Each structure stands twice: as structure tokens, then as C-alpha cells.
Image 1 (cartoon, each protein chain N blue to C red):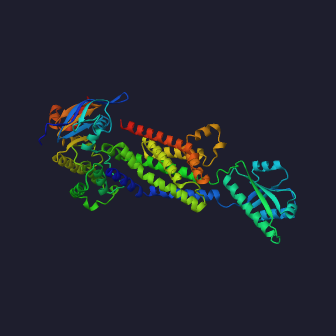
Image 2 (tube, rainbow over the protein chains, first blue to last red):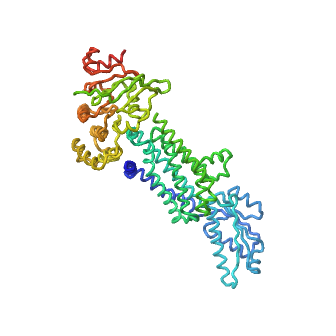
Image 3 (spheres, each protein chain N blue to C red):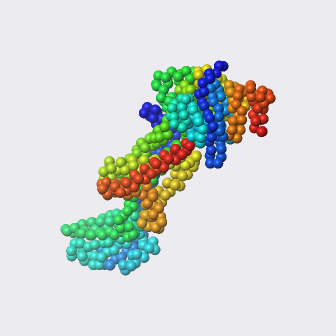
Length: 368
Length: 244
């Protein structure tokens, strides 16, 4: 055991003495999350808006004025048919359509209530959510100001509807997705590179000729990365919460356990990659092309799986990140317990065992 | 020096095939305890393949092989505890200091703290590395790296040390000093098994074997070989063998 810790200590020394490793390890997650967070979810400006005013009275006209003079929205077209909404979205002329119901002012004066419908093109879920929030804000301000004299407050019911993506998958998606990506990248890339480095420098031969057993060598090399990856996972969750208000609704413990499982999976993939690559460059290319790109493209992180062609959908089922994202989304955003994610967990567990077995087998073959 | 008659390495009909390629063709030889055994041959003659098998890094295809009294098929762990190994690349960790490298390997061989402190002090002093013991390996000259790598390989006082082309890329003076270190090691009872393709170095060995295309073509004391092949030095012996 002492021998093992000596070996782990050496691995930490490698990490903490290499500036590049440190930057990737600790800089990358922070930069990525901030970058993604702001690029994906920051302010909106000059959003094209379609208007369907069925009422055409003074209040609705003024409300429209308010929207268009707010600085966030630009009039794309005024329409007067249901079908035109769809064609506005399809042609990309508008991102959102505001519909005032007929006799809007009359209803307000007579019944104190009227309805506005906000229909958003939610194929870009993040901006759709923002657009809605902004519109609601503008309208709420306006109605408050015109009705200051009124004794009974007006009830303007603002109904929102999302086209193309009713469940709004994707709003907070970037945090689970980034977690899947960064953990995969750091765990798999870093371990495969550090193991191939020993091969390249010839130190692996020495270790193998020493009384250290192969599994001790691998475990010793991987242990520091387990710890550091776990710290990274927690950093991402914390940053998501502090900077972007992404909550952890469900159990933090469960989330941590699932993170550990995914980290183990990624590390065993890293070991597997190291057994098939001779140089650090090769390991890097394998990790980048074989893990990072598919993780970004096929896991549902950026592109919804439902919109993929059949063969890619099938392919996405063998991406570990796909299942991990589902798990994280469920725990973080929906607050579901283990009962709802045991299937995904089982898949991840199965994949982990498979990769470990394959890595051990390959490692032994290399010794022959 | 007097050579004990005990066989510390015993190899009989060792064969190693990679597919249809025969890298080691029925090698049979033994090494006496305490001697310097030179394992010579051109590049690609099969030296490294053989040394890897003896160190437990690779399995032979067939043959009977015992190293330090243990069978290479079933007792590799026991063998590994009794041997030291130094590869062609003087494999030390470039981003660790001199002292950290020594202590890492000492720890791997399970030396206790007292042994480590004592031997490290001795070693650094002997090599004159005390002033730079906290310097990173990447910042010290190649010659020092090589000496340090050798010292690390015998730090745990193994029965046998395997040196795989230990003098590659090193200047003649350093090479000479290095061979003095090898000689000193045998005084401590360590058997040295060394591969090289510098034929002048063969003169320093007690006995040498010369490998050509996977087979051992000659094995004896350098003086006997020179006489047998009617040559003035080992280089000539080697060329005569390799041409046939």
C-alpha cells in the first residue's frame, strides 16, 4: 500500500509540475462553462417579432408600440391568419409571434381579464426561453403603467407556447452536456496521454520490470485523475449554480455517485485508448476524434437526438455521454430519484465493466 | 576475477516467434553468478527480445528459462523482485528531481525509509550529485542521467541487473566511466547482463555471446574468441561472424 501511494504521489507531481496539464485540468472547465453559458444564454437584441392583432384597439396598439420600442424587438410582419405563424417561423422571418385576442380592450374594461399568446420558435430553446421572459417583462410593465388609476388590477393572461420543442429540452442543457463533455475529455484524454507518455519515454518498461503489478501501475496512474475529475465535476455544478442559476433539484449525493460512475467509465476508456496508441499524439487524436466529437455531436448535448437520422440515433445509443446527460438532467433539473434513472445507470455500469475488461485484456496482450 | 560456478541465468532452447518471424531461435546459454555477461549482436539480431523475456516483460514461445532460480513462466513476480533493469532510454522521470526519482524506485522495491535515506546519501555522494539532488532530471546532462539510471537500477541490490544498450549516445569518456561503475557493481556481487553493439565494450565483459539473425553464433571469453577467429579485436570477430 505504501508502495502504491508513492506511485500515486509521483503521478500528482507530474500533474502539478506541468503547466499545460494544469491549464487543461482546471482552466478548461471554467472557461468552457463561462463561454457556453454566456454565448448560449446572454442578452437578446433585435429579435424579429410577428404581430397578430385580432383586436386592433387602443390598448393593443399601445402594447405593440411598447414592445417595438423596447429595443429588444423588431417588427417582422403583421399577420392575420393562423397559418402565417408557421410560415413566419419556417422562413425564419420571425422568432416569436405575439397574438392579441379579439376585443382585447373591451374584455379588459368589462371583465378585467384578457389574453395574449406568445408563440416562440423553440428550435433554439435557449433563446426562445429568453425571448419569452423579455416579452413578458415588457408587457407586464406596460399594463401596470396604464392601469395605475384603475382600482381593480387588470388580469392579462399571457399564454406561452413553444413550437418545435414543447418540453424545452435544452434550456439548462448546457450544464449536463458540458459536464459529460469535460469529464470525458479530461478523464479519457489525460489518462490516455499520461500512460502513453510512460511508454514513449521508456519508463513503462521499467515499471513493468519492477515488482509493481500491471494493475497497480494502471490504478496508480488513474487515481489522481479520479480525484481531479471529481473536483472538476463539482466545480461545474457550482459554477452553473452561481453564475447561471442552474439548480440541483434532486439529491446531490446521487448526482455525485453518478458522476463517479461516469468518471470511472471515461478513465477506463482512457486506459483502453492508451493500450492501442503508441505515442502521445496518437492518444490525443484518438481521444479527440473518437470521444470528444461524437460526444458533442451525438450525445444530444447540442443537437436533439429526435431530429437525427435513424442510423445516427442508433449510433447515439452507444455514446456513454448520452445516458449520462439523461441521468444528470433528471437529477439536476427534474429532481427525480434513482427509480427513474436506474436503467441509464445500468447501461453506464455495463459500459464501464466492458471497457475495463477490454483495457485489462489489451494491456495483458501487450505484455506477450 | 574468480567466477563462481553457479548458474544464475539458465536458458535452454528458448524460442520466440512473432507470427512466422523467429526472433530468437533455440537460444541455449547460461550466466554465472557475479560475472559480466555481454550479449552482443547487430540491431535486429534479437537481443532486446531475449532481454525482455529474461526480465519478465514478455513470454517466450517455448524453451526452459530460469532467472535467479525462478521459472519465467510461473514465477515472474519473484524474478522481478531480484532483478534490476535499465533500458536504452535511461528511463528516469524528466519532471521529477534526482532525489525524487531515486526515492520513487526505492519505494517500488519496498526499501524502508532508513535504507532509502542511507543509500541515497551514499549514492549521491559517490556520483557527486549531492549539490544537485533537487534539480529536475531534464536539467542535468545526459552522462549524469545515464549514471543515475544505472545506480537506480541497482539501488535495491538485485541479484542481476539487465542493461539494454546502456551506452547509446554517450561520449567515450563517460562510457569508460560507466563501465567502471558496472565493474564496481560486480564487486558487490551483482551479476551484469549487458547488451551492446559497441564491440570495444565487449572487451570489458567476462564472457560474451554474439547473436546473428536470432541465433547465438559464438559464446566464450573475449580472449578465446579472438584467438579462435584469428582476430586482433572483437570488432573483427564480429564482422567475420556476421558475414558468414
